[in-house]
Image (cartoon, helix red, strand yellow):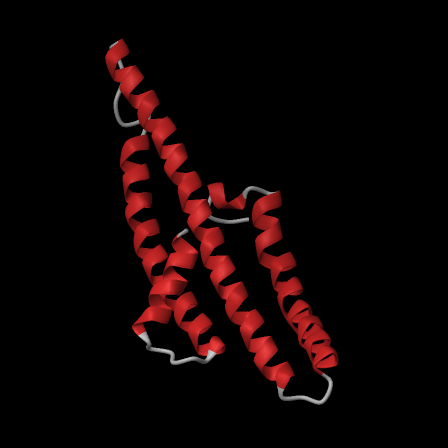
Length: 147
């Protein structure tokens, strides 16, 4: 809903005229900015709720239950942050798709141009993914800040 609502809002403002590529770039930029702000705020809330177990000693059941609820809500907020990240990814995917369509539409063989651009993007993105993202997921480097 957020993504399509953003698309509608940007289209209704008339900033981009009728050009599909400009519309998708504006949507991707606006979704990215709004999502960054929400992620920043939600991350601060999740950090505050989860707390730090080493800082204080929990002696009463009430404090323990409150801390456990905070950890559960913190994990939920982190999942919401992941969902927001996926929305940003979809926004930029729509942007790249519109750009590829725009470039391919001015050629004599649009299918060939789309295939070449897709292979170029894959050749550019896959090595970076394999070098940086995959090791973080595989070795759980995000937990420690390094791989």
